[in-house]
Image 1 (cartoon, rainbow, N blue to C red):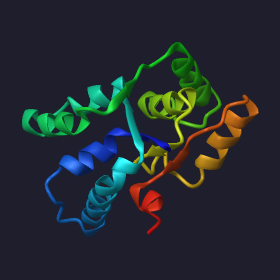
Image 2: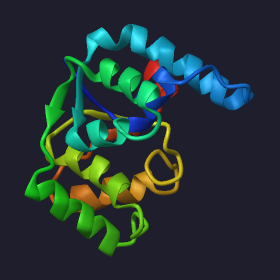
Image 3: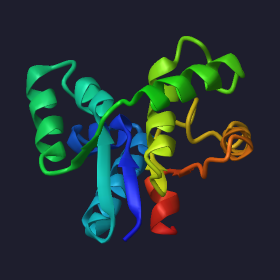
Image 4: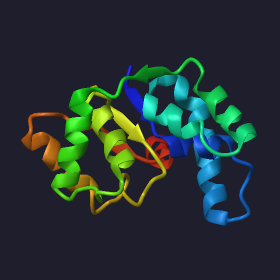
Length: 155
């Protein structure tokens, strides 16, 4: 069974009220569609996802945390912290986006197959992904396939 690291944006889209913005509404629907098929994957999150999902409006946070119940949790290992720092030093991720680097790093350090996200600024970015993949491969690590729910659904 393939493993999928669920980044916080996925949980946020699942728990959010339907958006009036057509693009965001479409992303929300695709996220819900993927979630309906998610049982064919081993789902994992990190403690960082739990922390991020806990922030903000108390009612919304409660919904987000409920979605995470029963999902396996990965520790933020020293190796993951080191990878994140090195990706920032290599200018793959902006230095003020340590959380984004940590999401990628913990998935890679844990040997996760896919990293699922709607963060297309610093994670699922077509210009950045190949550089991240190359960086990990140079260091002898198979990177997770970074993708959106739409890509993982095959739509």
